[in-house]
Figure 1: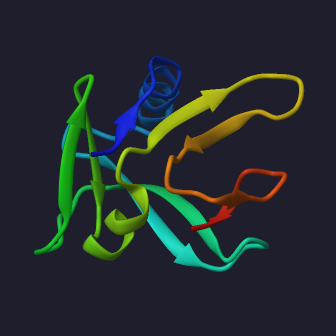
Figure 2: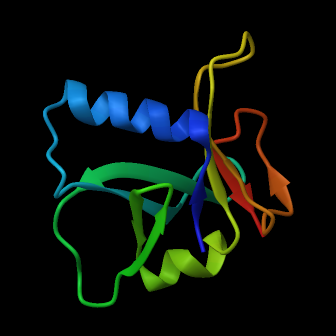
Length: 108
């Protein structure tokens, strides 16, 4: 399961509103090869489900991932920070054994 924090939910809803995304859109979370730790996260808005997509809903937000990415994302929470050390989305991933200093890539 993938979850979303209250802060990330508020930010996603604001971005979707600002970009004119309707209620048929959802957040697609993917894991891609690359980054300084080997794997990196990818977030996007989408409104088309693929045949084998894994669909989760948390706090009224639909979060979707493909089966390959799901292996790395089980138990992950999407969060958002506006702190001094960085502003943006980040992932609290219990499966990551190592993350880079910017938090955008990881390894298992």
